[in-house]
Length: 490
Image: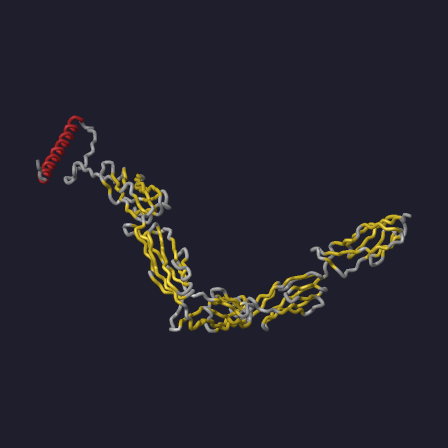
């Protein structure tokens, strides 16, 4: 039955008026019955005429998947083939849910991979489980990857003409029976005439001698061929680029060679023999990489099938802008050594290697310096050591002090001799670093001159039977040796 909205409003207004009238009647009765102290009451708020008696708004239920299925469920792929999996999610009522986010994964990526959209790619033979997950609910599909069945093989290029020594790379393309390219297949290469052309395991053909050879590529019973014609190379000229080269010590430059036949055509992929006339100045690798070693000139030669060209490589020295010596103010003791290091810099502050350096000392009586910058303390004093390279100098101030004696050793430390014999004792002086000190005064003494005496130079003269201690003293540091004098037995 249909009720219009205007009728509903009319009924609602009548109902409200009835309720108001009943309320007023109750109030009057309460006043009449309650005497002079009626119980106060609170008037209810009027009910708006446009307010509905009951309103309920239902919230839409969230879409929750309770099951996910994958289709196809158990596909079979060949290596290199792809297959799109379709995920179908349903709620508890069996209603298909759309636009739900999903995560894809594979149990073994070496067998098959899966993209974020469910595209499966076969990699190698085997089995793998592909899983899709949405809202904690998962679905799976068992994928089997089999070895691709090769339907055809093609070699590119199918023909080529080489000159002796030249190379040509051949490529083989395998396809399955559906025409899909098959990857990672083993290909066997063979040459019908190896005396004319050879082929490597990767399809690289090399011209050996004039003639024709058929190169065959075989994979899984399928074959394809390329015909290679080899002619005798007639090289007209070989040109080195650049014609002249100037480099600085330590630099490396790449040389290139251009080979042309009698018709002026460029011939590529021919072996080149490289050589340098002066390896001490510049070396050249088997690929034409020149390395500057020392100042001077060297002739670099490139030879192709007996035809050669040369270029002059000039190696120059970068002029030094400054020379620094380190350490700049070392202290050494007499007899001690100190290695100085010179560093040459160019105008931009870059270190220059391979420079010739000469060394000199302003006071050789106090400190000397070798050709490699090794300073030796001679006597107390100071000396300025200078390093010179290309007219630019750097200096270090050397201070030489007297070495302090840390120990004295007398050898031999024990000697047995007969009366009237003479023996020479030696005293060795060393500093705190263990370096031997020479040229210091040593005082010798005997504890019992009646048994043995000792000279100023350490000669012991035995006098009579007994024991004596010989002491050597230098700058307050002493050491001893025991002397035993015995009677001569007859």
